[in-house]
Image 1 (cartoon, one colour):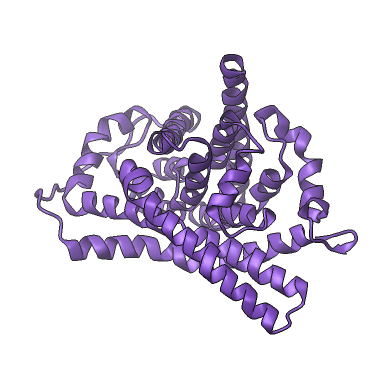
Image 2 (tube, one colour):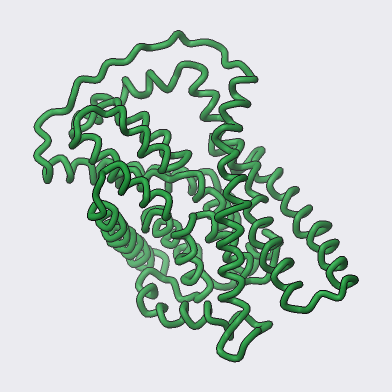
Length: 374
């Protein structure tokens, strides 16, 4: 699945779409604005803001749809129900059962729908544990970020690196579930009963429908949340104390990032662009990628990849990916946690605990990595 999505099919298609967006679309829009006599600030908003940010994220659509197509194939073949049955024994060890496996798998698509799917878990404590560990499952919103950084720092091992990030999220989720089992005194989990469908050849129309149902949410986000986040980061990176600036190093976003450099330096992060982008990720994780595009004033994924290689090492990039995997859930996920648990305290706890875990794991990986790789 990951080789198809990141090496064999997804990345080549993504590169073609990226060249189209950063080339003909960007240059045509720029020339049109010049002919219309648009002021520099408006041109910057449309070219360096909207097209660079939203278009930069849309370039990752082939990889996301390829991964969803693989998951839909597994579902329609009858495999997923068996996977839930096989994992039941492992889930029993951490105070859950196979019923929690399905919401967690759904969480790979979107944590919000995963949390809502946890309603099928009858026991209140099991349902709460499933909800609290859901944000550690790597949702599709993080895929554009992974794609960007593995292409920049691990071009020969893209699938393996992304797979390791997914597995780390699963391990952290299972570890926290075991911790919650002890804290909540879950003595035994409920019984898991499931009807196993027959194995059969998947139908193309069902695979396409499943892929579209999972992927259309990403496209909708591009026109709503990602668009809003892109405009926000453009304002922060295009205006400073002296007003409109052409150099984002003199912007409010740069000031914010530099203030927080001492906090993130222990995990190897000293670039204000990456630090500022992390804040926009709380709106939606995809916005991190669009924020990087805006702050580097480019709609070209290839240009951004080349720029990132000059700012950080592969070890720092990997620590950053771990931090992005584990840190605070997006607003939509937090709202769903509050809705499903009926308590604001669990929403606040989710933010604090995920930040502590993300920082701790990224710190350990970076500091241990420095011992071996300098």
